[in-house]
Image 1 (cartoon, helix red, strand yellow):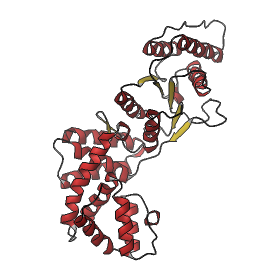
Image 2: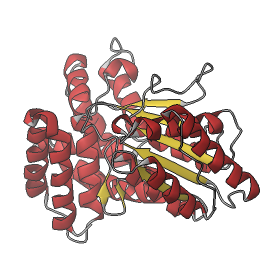
Image 3: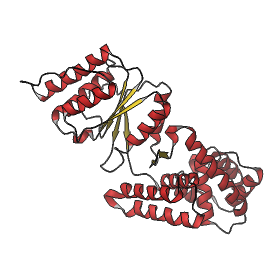
Image 4: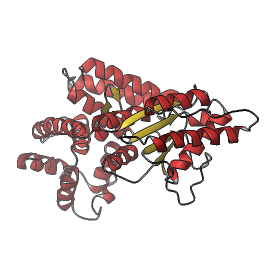
Length: 345
């Protein structure tokens, strides 16, 4: 978002009141980026201010994060009247930007989504015709692997052309998963015999049966097939089926499908010598990422919270993120849903 001249001047006045060390600490804490990644820390503050303003203006969400932090930490600075106006405009711009592309949304429908930059980029590339056919999402339990489905489905449906299909590997048997996929793909594969065969052989037969059915009736539109909780698959034969089907897709022997394996790493059981599959490793999201999402949700609400009340809600989220333990991300997600309901977003 382009800042107005008086807004740029106000921000420059705030920047030059700090020294290089102070500005670096502020940027690291509130935006998650050290000054050295924007400009040399050895320049004078006037020159640094020009580069920082240019950098922060390139992304409305980044600008919201910086201006919100300034408003909180320096409420009585002479620049604040102009910066508050800039914050209001930047918040609106960030909300519009998030709505402009489905993969950039802070909410997948009614489900808040924090960070996931890599997945967002992957989905954007797939919509644009990218060549990836297998995406692996690994991370600790409760890190948001299953949550990926909401963004994947949101983007797929927003295109109007991609059909998303979810298979819960923890709850379905091999035969149930097979039938579920066949029904959603509108094909009628013949279920192979299971007599006198190992789990690996049974899985290979089921995968080949699905491949044969799709060969006689190819999918009309791209399909994003999402296997959730694959590391906790209900049986060895189901896990092997997932691997076999993925192998067919990876080797281009089965087209029209993109497979997402939520809970898989590169040792899951797929032969991928050339690392054609994309791997996303989930980590705890940062305070800046959480604040960006919460601010965007508030901005899109029919009744956005005032700054003081919003700060209270955000502080509660940050406290939960810091002290919540194993279930911190899940509990933060609930607070984001509470915020969505409170603001009418």
